[in-house]
Length: 253
Length: 386
Ligand code: SF4
Image 1 (cartoon, each protein chain N blue to C red):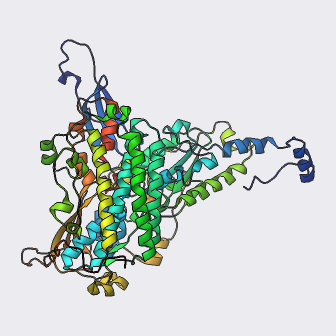
Image 2 (cartoon, chains in turn blue, cyan):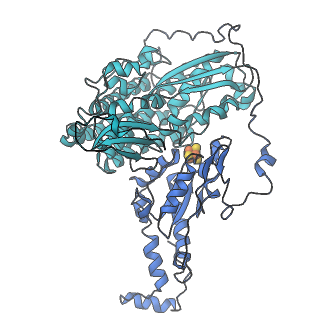
């Protein structure tokens, strides 16, 4: 596995010689980050379909325990990593932000699945938030619907790389007076208020989706209900199933 | 939040006690999605329990009403994300009824095979999660998901996706099954009983399981019928109602299988009915695999629409078709106005309607039991809130 950008001054050959004698030369940063990257505790928190793939990742075949991240904690106070696995609806978004605020520093967020990145297949729904990154900062985005368990493992490895690159002296959670809490949106009459948190997200100037695909959903196109009374039952009755004898040519075709 | 219950409503005959309001969810350790319960406790006993839904309301129906018929098929996968194939089947049946399509025989067999495989997946996962709620933290789920992966491999090979298969089409299925895949399905079907034996040896007569589950959350047959409960929940209460038998849709009438019923309707019965149902599913799979005929997999009428699904315009009319999904009666109601989009599209979600009975089952039980009762109802929030 790729380690951090090696900042140690010690020559590699010398290091190897020392390692043969049982002496390890490392920096505080590397040691510390090695500990942190190998024990990321995710929060046990599933929202929709993607959560099932998250559970599958924790199970025997994919076994997220190999990366030290198998300990799913139900409480945000004990978790380092929030995997936003599933569709974030407007009703759920305040709770997600609140859970994020309750997590202890340092905290990381992985958005799993197209839904939590940008609304996914449900982007046109009136109740679906178009991406949780409007309210909280996200470290790794994992596209897919749902992402395969391997993808989640890859996302975790990317997060580990990010952790490796962090320095104790400059890490933001060691700064004095740091308070990474974000305002919790409220559910107003027309969706969430505010619509996004300008600290972490800014709207695009041009709507790429509209430019490329036009308006994919034709809301309000229809105005008149079909008159079902005058229509004779349109569907022909399904043909009765033949007698319950197996067909004459059985066998795997 | 409104106060649901006033302490003075209860006459505790001179005892000076007060009720405690507990909010469970939407984020909670039991693995049932974003579901919230407002429980009022007297000591440890539940005196009132109100489910709060809507945390996963994804506007499935509104989106489907603005799309072509075929485009909603992938969305049905995401209703009950454990059994995408059963959901596909329900939707395909209702549109076929609307348009008067016939399905070739081989496709019907493939559909039945897929629907029964998803039933295996669903029941095995439900039992795993139920035990998770009982306190056997995650170990049973490991066993359950080990088997699930084997079936998901088959799904992946035929449809390209592990969970969201999107495999059925109106008038048939997307791809044919090769003999090699049929052999693999047969391999899973023959190996599955051994796993079930193992699972049952560990669980069925387990003392802890029996003590926690028996006589907990009893649902009387009358109440179940009046509340229009369906699925294993209803059959555990001893009501013989299985839509595969009652409606005989697809080619189910050709197969021999029994409908397992529970004697009492408690959590244990629901667990055991699911185990027995898996055994019956295996029987159906066995028969279907040995008698699957050769032939077409798509109705001739629908082949042109595979390339241009937006030209598919069913005649004006309405149709309701239902299937016995692993969770109960899954129905799709579609009204067509002759345009490429349905005028009205409604899903009768079994877990949503089964959930209405939760309070009646939980009243008078301990708060720890409420979680396993919820687990035994078997809800998936994607389907409850849609
Ligand atoms: S990205 Fe796809 S699988 Fe994941 S929650 Fe959204 S719809 Fe479900």
